[in-house]
Length: 198
Image (cartoon, rainbow, N blue to C red; front, side, top):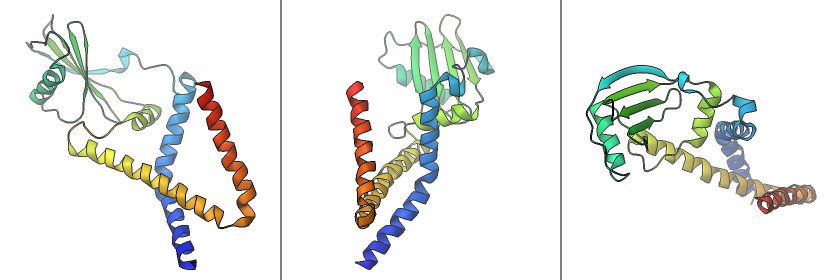
């Protein structure tokens, strides 16, 4: 039993160390989301984007949203760009966003002017943290997005294991049970209040 306790203590300790940078990133970025403009300023204006290049391009846009991603992927491939992307349509204008933690790229195609414009935006550390928080992984194509998704899975399951080992170690120390119940009950009550007010 002593060996099991030692194993769980070591697991809890080193999991905490492993998860610390990730937990810090999510905690700080959540605080930035929570405090909005007071923490990281107003949403960046269009002037924050720097023009990289502009090209003539004749592109047939699909009538509706069907086939929009395929069209965007073809545009990106022709420009030598790969990886995850998002696409939006505003009338006769197509906007393709290529996420990047440090400097996102935006391609805009105007079908009336038949112009494709590429813009890049450098970011403050607050914007980088917000992108880290929001970034998804799987289903976007490419190795690096899948790796990011895998690392997030490791973080999630690691956090569950860290919680489980923490609860076990707490229960093994009778002197801490009363205050442990108070802390655990406080967490449950505050979460219930939050859920009840949504």
